[in-house]
Image (cartoon, rainbow, N blue to C red):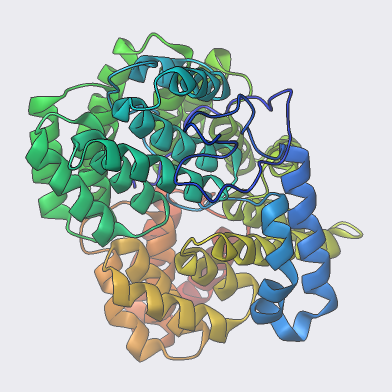
Length: 504
């Protein structure tokens, strides 16, 4: 999926009961007649955050065991609520749901309260248990709930609901598209592509399948194919979910102007608060990547005017505030974000802000954030998700370098995207293997994608291999593009560049 934002995050439901375990191929709380309970909303945010923090405490006590011991420690915590994949990179691209032949329309899920939508579907399926379209929509809704609420226990429920849909109507495109979305959420991108292709063979206009196909091709590093898929989707089902993916494919190839124009058109056509918040945040992230912090803050303000609890906009605003020099506001904002959803991206950003601030106790606070990242990856893995990329990115700078390299190699074996190339290059670097790292660093920047972190990593690796001229060029390019790309990384880039300039 594009490294954009998660979709609108529903507020915590009034009923935060932990779902019951259900051996039937349906959903949580399912009765023998195939209907469902009205609850099934899962553990609340407070429970999930507490579970992650307890796990992090255990990880610190048994630091020598690192993630292996952490996984054992956390196994019981998963059933009580965990944090799902979706923090560092794969941040979703639209709350559009597959078309359903029944209770709830895609617009209801995209623009309304997700929990209320699920309750409505459950009520409908008690009366109409053979409505395969609504079972498929429910499966996709569970995928969205897993991502927006940080609860990977929803993935098995999604799988059961989608299986029920496929059993009632074998080969229906709605279930296939839902299975594609579920595979993508679990970072099984080859599987996502296979299911999406099967769905589109049944229905070439299935929006969910069209979008997931783009996502899978992007994550597999097949950018030319992704561009063709985006053109096809734009021809068949133009709309905000397709427009945002179309824009990201262009951004990955260095065409920022087209990406911005497409997102601006998408924003002008957005009316529902969820759509406005989503697209405005995407524009904010695009501006932030280019070092345009004032513009980014304006977009985030618009997003938060539409939805003042939209976590991706809150996180983006904090990052832009940090880059603009308002560290106090940035720390306060990220503390609010991780208090609700302790995901790797904001946790690392907050930890680095603590380190950069350097006040009494800040180093310990930073260590707490990095320990929470370890806890998150262990919980997510226990929930069946692949977290190797997140592990590699966080561990390379704030953890075990050997574990970072193991994870990066494993992810590179699965897919060859610019993000996996950069992660592998940096993991090799921190392990002192810069000659091996350089080809991957070059590959990460080969598409023209304007990413200051990638340029910084390449410059550092080139300096380590003795190519000072190239190192100066890429470190300068990183700082010219986005001088506040990372509280610690930008500082280190400036120091390295100053040393290189002194050696000329």
